[in-house]
Length: 358
Image (tube, rainbow, N blue to C red; front, side, top):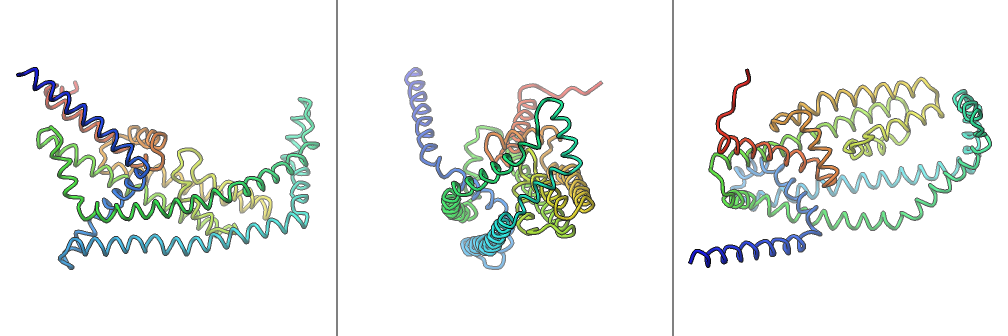
């Protein structure tokens, strides 16, 4: 009889594992928009609670928030897209006219006669490489490469835009149901965990507070960096500063380079177009802003509620980005925090009381 029960259990859990894997394959194309829908629902939960006090209906409150989120993303996206397209077209036209007017040759001539290039040429000549003879070929090859890249990726950009619209629709659809029925899903998942009630509280509260802290920190720092760097670009006279400021938001989420991918080339443009003084001023402005925001504001905003050390938080974010992409910004610290909570549960349950340091 005992053997028969064991066979039944093995069959059940084996069948459950197979179906779970099949479910993963079924949902795998939609995991990213579903995950964003869950994150958006988590962020909008406090607003739904307050709104429900006035409309007296969870479905109505959820519908209002879903429409608000949709319009809040779609309308600014349309406006920003039109601005970005206009500025991109203007930039392309300006660059094309300058190239036709000999700006490329002037830039090349400026580089050839600059002190820095003279020093580099002398150093390269010591090793038998005539740098000044290869600059024209390098310039033309670079321009040709950029032009070919733009042409080749125009179709892919259109496909990415269509894919974004579809994924956003799925995320918004998931947002509605996770926001309306999220409490039921959360409690159902919580009940499935074979743990003591106090241990469940510790693990799930850790997950909630970690996601909240990471979202708050990332949104705050991304906004602050875009605003401060954009203000610096405007003050020092960099053209298309709106476009570049918006580009600072995704660039600030990159583990390597960050917003320096935006403001360092902008400073290089100022050296060529205006002079060294505004370029150095822009570098100092952006450097101080990034150092203060990344090293003081971001850790304070993200550590509150995660209970992770700075090293653990850093490794969680870097590892999450490597494994999960942009979602890793949230998934990495969440995994680190839940693992720490599980270790604490293990310590209390199986390892006995913690020894005090001598």
